[in-house]
Amino acid sequence: MILDNYGYSSNNEADRGAENNLYPNESKQPQKPAKEMFLAGLLTGIIICSLLVSGIYAGVKTADILQKNKAKEAAGDGQSAAQDIVNDDSLKKLESIEKVIDEYYYNEEDINIGNMIEGMYAGVVDSLGDPYSVYYTAQEWEELMEDTEGIYYGIGAYVSLDPVTGYGKISGVIEGTPAQEAGLRENDIIYMIDGENMQGFELSEIVAKIKGKEGTDVHLTIYREGQEDYLEMDVVRRQIEAPTVNYEMMDNDIGYIQITEFDDVTYDQFVEALAVIKGNSAKGLILDLRSNPGGSLSVVVDIARQILPEGLIVYTEDRDGERVEYSCDGDNELKMPLVVLVNGNSASASEILAGAIKDYGIGTLVGTTTFGKGIVQRILPLTDGTALKLTVSAYYTPKGNNIHNIGIEPDIECQFDSDKYYDDGIDNQLECAAEELKKLMEK
Image 1: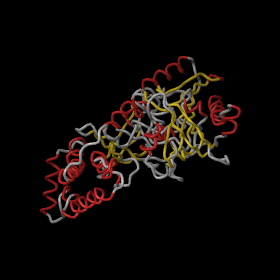
Image 2: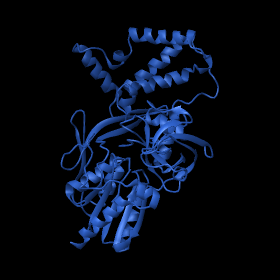
Image 3: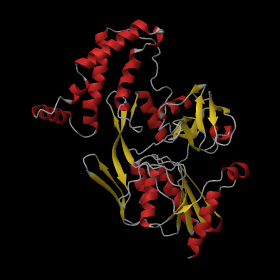
Image 4: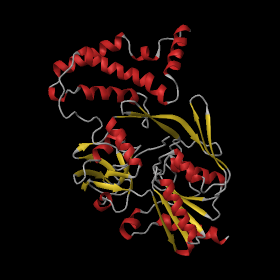
């Protein structure tokens, strides 16, 4: 189960991941099929999305869905799911749209039936109005799976959608990557990519345009607060091997662990980092979740079990009120003072961990209010190699708080001083966390 990607990668989190094209063009322009074949393809896709797909992969048999539809009809409650979507009026409208495009669109080479059908599938999901529910083409799904393994091709920056402007926003930069070398900073707004204005684009589309073949350039036009004009940057794409966990021993016997996202590889990396920190006789720990956009629910739960006392970690509730609980046995409860760094780009899975730590009172949160993504997505692969990511439930902290569109307030607010960081290399939030941790260690 994926929480994600409230915003995903740089090319990586291109939500998770993005792809070279949202709807890749065929290498060879196919001959135009008859209208009946075109409509049949579209309608077949709709029926598959509305019935077979969700039924098979969500653990509900198609027969059960059909039975419910029959019961619905018998009760006079309306049409079946397929009939709700496909009726005479929609058939006529599809035929009219196809006919108008065929007769009037100025560039016949742009007419690609495969792209139209893929666009129809994506449109069914887009109609939900949920920015976290996505249709993945086969190529997008394959690249998404590669991204969760921590290796991808891109620039090395995490990207989310800025809720104020609607543009893509740099939510984090990985050290030693092209993004850092080019001078990109957290909270930079991606105004244009290769000269194309990005307003109104979905996150997956933005990330797809950033990603590309290794060694090629992507030109970014950036709006940065405080700058009088836009910044123009050429960034070279290359293979990014992103460690999701970084750690070190700081002064005063303070251990430091940063988790950049919760991918498949993150649990093992975290266990190793925690073992090294404990092996160096750390007397306190700073856990840095700043700009962590989220990731896998199962991974964050496993990591929480290495820290929390016995009890509930998080629970989810779906639309039917069905509740699923994730608990900790407390066998690995952390026995040292803990400070957790968070900010406005800490989202989803990182909020689950921060929320549980705060509810149990075993750590102090320092920084700024988190993003506020309190819903869970599930990925449902389809038999043709494509996939759906759908929001399926809301999650709640151990005390029953849903933080969606609210976020988690820190115990100690500390605004990030970007001038100090970028001009002098001083992380004032980390300094604030270290000072608070020293006070806890002295008690």
